[in-house]
Structure formats: structure tokens, C-alpha cells
Image (cartoon, rainbow, N blue to C red; front, side, top):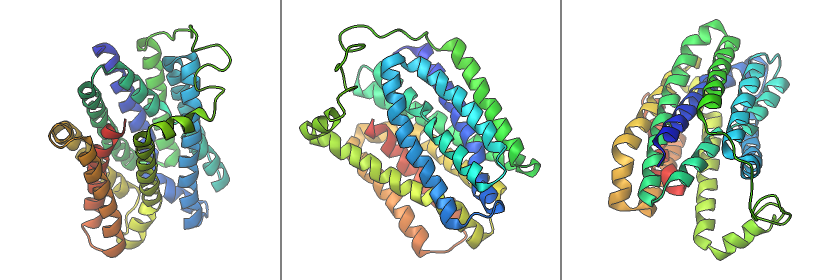
Length: 323
């Protein structure tokens, strides 16, 4: 595996996660300030996820056509612009629009994951690389909300512009360190009808031919759907039940990020080797399901600490095994 490229991708993921997570704990409070109802705030998070789905599909096709490194640069630059515009929002409609725009260009992680999977020569290398990515993701999830919470006293615009600056730094560094994109060549690119492009039904055919792959897709969708639904209302719930503000939500996400780092660094690789990917997937999904059940049934001071940590633990076992 190309060590230099691996470190470049890790740095890219770290800065991208840190920048995007800086605004995450403050968004619901800003939406409330603009007069949004809780249902509208939940819709905004769903809209972000929906745009992320469309964006990931589109970015994946563009990466196949123009090269992953070029598309990665474009995602970083677009995220820089959308975060800056996000900070200038004056009403909920603008907030919703720029949130969706951020979701569409949130393909940095998927492109980096694709590049890592392509670099891996064995399943062990793949799990190891994805575990390392989980560590740097956790570092971004830790520092981003923490910094965002500390800067929240200066206003949301300051936080958004700081996040945009980090993403711009990420773009500049990636522009100098990532390999130059290579033009497509060969029979599988640039010809009509070649590859998946131009054959929208081919994916359905692949899923029919490989039922196990279809199960992985379904599992990934269901756990992402449930996790997104929970996180979209989590901030409002903590505000109503426990009186949390943006700074304290940043601290909650900081703890979750720390748990993700510990899990990915010390447990995930050993667990996959000892138990296998299927068992780890089941344990991770069970952990996330249990977190939703606990939130629904109990109100206690330890909920805001334990639940994000349990979610992060489940994600640390799920993500490396689904790719």
C-alpha cells in the first residue's frame, strides 16, 4: 500500500471531518433562532442525508470518469464555499438550502474510502486502512465539535467561517499532495455503453446476482437511516430534557469521537480478526439499536454521555466491515 498516499488521505479526512463537525452541534439552535419548528429541523437533517445520497452517487460516477483525485479536490473546494455561505444565512430557507448543498458535496469521505479500498491488496489491509480512517474520523469528530462549542460565544458566523477556512486549507494541501488525475483510457471508459455508466439497470442485475451484496447495501441503508433520524432530533431532545446548549453538545460529540478513536485503534481490528466481519456487524448494529431503545425509555443524567459513546462504538464495528 502506498504509505504517502495513505497519510495524505488520512489528513484529508481528518481536516474535512473537523471542519464539517464544527457547525454540527450549533445548527439546531440557529434554526430555532430563525423560528423553525422541531419538525422542520428534523427535515433539514433528512434533506442533508438525501442530498448526500444523490451527491455520493453523482460524485462516484464523476470519479470514475475524471479520476478520484480531481473529484476529491472539487468536493473540498465546494465544501469550502458552502460552509462560508452557510455562515451567512439570514433565515431558515437559506439555512436549509446551504445545508443541502453541504450534503451534496459531502462526498470527500466516500472518495477517500474508495481510494483506500482500491489501494488495499488483501482483506486485512482493507480492514486495517479503514480502521485507521476511523481513528482520524474520530479525531475530527472530537476536535470539531469542541472547537465549535468554544467558538460559539462569538456567533455561528465565526464558527462557519473557521470551518470553511479549515476546508480551504485542506483543499490547498490536497492540491499539492494528491497525485495528478489520469485521463480515462481503455475500453471501459470513454465509450458509449461501457461500464455502469449508461446502464442504470446494471446495479440491480449485480444485486440479483450477488444477494450478499444486496444484504450489505440494505444493512448500510437501515443503520444509516436510523442513525440519521436519531441524530436529527438528538440536540433538541438534550436541550429540552437536560438544558444543553451548543457548547455542551460539542462536549457530548467530543466524548463520542474519543470513544470512536479508542474503538478503532484498540478493538476493531482485533475483533474482526477474532470474531469475523459478520459477527462484528451484528454487534455494531445491536449497539446502535440498543442506544435508540435506551433514549426512548429512560431519562437520566448519564444518557447524553453513554448514548453517543454507544453509537460511536457500534459505528466503529460497522463501517470497516461494510466496505
